Length: 401
Image (tube, rainbow, N blue to C red; front, side):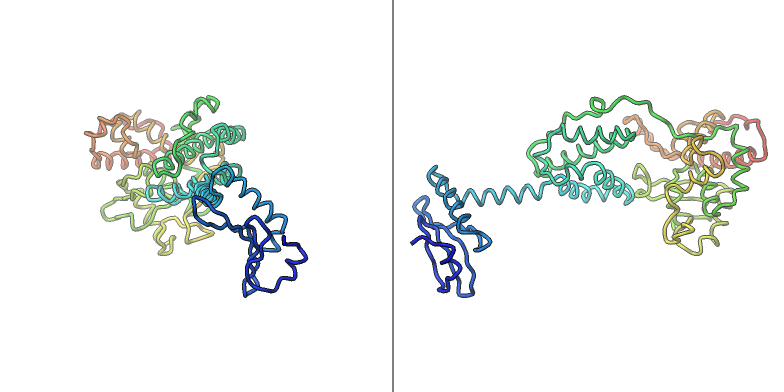
């Protein structure tokens, strides 16, 4: 006799209790009640599982059995199709955009500084994952990525929009290479065809005529001394703000007047050696007692185990009256402008700025570090700044390194 809900509720005898057409409920000695369906395919007896009673009702079990019989009638094996569907679901769960992005980020972490990896992850978490992160890579259409990118652009972050697009495309390339997806549907997403054209806005920089006033304000600045001395070293070495903020005592050889910045802290991932002028050495010796024996040369005044924050320099410059008109990064442009106008060898200047040679052939043969020339250049620059602080307005005689 077919099963009924009343009979199912009162079953006590372990064993198989049949409903008809292969469907039965198996009652175990421990009291478990499992829906099963017995069927034959390809000459072999097989079984399907439909869940546990009462979570799966009698009606639901019968409906599932009916669907299985339709599959059998079409000549297919419902058990094999179910296994394939489970495998597909597992594959899709493992190949969501967020999951594969995590693999890509882990792969790239060996090439990036931790702050870079954090910044890339944050951009994806903020702009891509909320809408698309849980979707399988293969299910996402180019138009959906384009819409997400244009939303970033519409917020006023055009540069960020371009970077996020490049990161999404890089994830898809990685996924194809590592067989997470068969083909790359994002190949034709070109930034210039998606984002509006824009003019490049260079970082605001001091001009040479503003130097005397700025240096006077820096000398009189009553803020955190770590910040003041870090700004001084930044100007004297023409390095990047992040390189100074993260500077560690282990990188400096004060006797040899040399600062060696390791590859992992450089934008181009190449070691950079910076000659130290007498004035730069004076800054560092002043910082030795102030840093309190810590690893960092310029520790944060609020969190001594951490470096100065990313906004520290520009916040200090804003307090000095330069908000919007000059940035800490702009000191590099000032250094380059003045040194070039005073006749120094452009190759020496570019090497001091740690700029990569854009010409591939020239880069292969032009490997000089110009250390002696850069020692002279940075000492000249330090003396020049002292002169400008004193109010001298005439440039030093042109010199060629």
